[in-house]
Structures are given as C-alpha cells and as structure tokens.
Length: 287
Image (cartoon, rainbow, N blue to C red; front, side, top):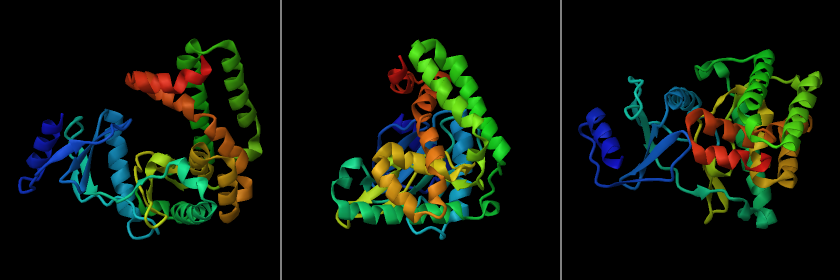
C-alpha cells in the first residue's frame, strides 16, 4: 500500500523526492501517509471519500488566513480522477498531538482551551459560505437529513438492536423532530467532526496548536460542533464553552440530541461501507 501511494505521488509530482514514508493510524475515510517526516498525504478509501476530500480542499482554500488556529493548507493535490488510490491531498504536518480528555485535569488549561476552541468555532461559523464553494442548506434540508438518518437507522440498524434500544432510539428522534422550536437557527459553516482526535495540542505551550480533518465540513447546525466537544470532553467543559459562544444558551438541547446519534452514525458507516470494526464499535451499546 505504501509503495502504491508513493508511486502515485511521484506520478503527479515527478520532481518530488520521497526519502521515507510510513502509514499513519488508519482513518475511517482516508489512508494517511506521512512523507519525509513532515508532510501528510491523505488518500480516500471510498468513492464517497473522494467527494469529501474535494469539498474539504475547497473549504480549506476558502478559509485560509481567516482562522486563529492553524488548519491544513493543501500544497499537493491530485483531484482530476474519480478513482480510489489516485486522488490525494498533501500538506505540511501541523505539530501537536490529539487533545485527549486527560489534559483537562488542569483547570487552568481547561479555561485556555475553551477560549481557543470557542474563538475558532466563532470564526468558522461566521465565515461567509459563498467564499468556500460549498452547498448551502436550509433548515428544512437539515431536518430532512435528520429524518433520513432516522430512517436508515430503523432499516439497517434496528435488526441488530435489542428491543429496549429500539424504544430509546425512537424516543430520541421522535421527541427531537416533534419540537419545532429546536430547529430555529441560522445554518452556518461547521467543521462536522469537532472531537478530540481532530484537535491538536502543544503540550509544551499548553495550548491548542491546530485543527485537522475537514472532511465532514458542511453548512449545518453550529450545535453539531459542540456535540463533538461534548462527546470528547463532557458536559462541564462544554457548558463553560457555551458561555463564551454567541447565543450559546440556545444550543444545549440540539447539541445533546446530536451527541446521541454519533454511535448510530458510526454503526451505519460500518454497514454502508463494509467496515466491520466501525459497525461493532457503533452498535455495541444497542445490542
């Protein structure tokens, strides 16, 4: 696999010198190749992943220079093909390590992290959608996507769930969809996967060093990004974040709903893409 990807990079960039490379931790949508110890090349594993990578590249080019935290800057691109294994982007590695929850043992760091993350989300959510060449979505379309998620859960996941889990999932979706006032917000540009693995931390400086993986970026509900923080770091930290975010007091219910769909989405990804590990991880709590 490594040699195949190296050959593809050389094919597109004949003058590019690869002294060494290694596969990084395998992502859900992309294979990640670390080249020369300083460059990250991402190769989509599915046709859907190709579409996401192309969208992500447009977004990153559109937001470049307008965010307070470092994000990937696609220096190398192969976007002409629709064939898995040929499409890629490459960018300079952002130094840091994933911001795992253990960092929050220090309350002083927690406050600084909250300020950095909310500042970043405020900038991203207020960025002009017209500048990133991304599909706009209305509240109605966002609601329809939630209904679609619900339908797919019932069709594909319910056969693998126990009866109590089915009742809880139905209640989770039905109560949310019946509450019309919850879906009263302005759709904005969101990261879409704003959790610990995509937030990089510089332990020497005790600060967030960058944000990666914009493959799920879309026009959507700002509460969705806070749901990612809730899933990673818990309610106490996220409530602190919401006090710093404009209109944060109106987000909590929606955020909690989205958080309750994450495992279901992972299980669906597993079924729909033949990823057994993702399916087992997602469905585990519903058997």
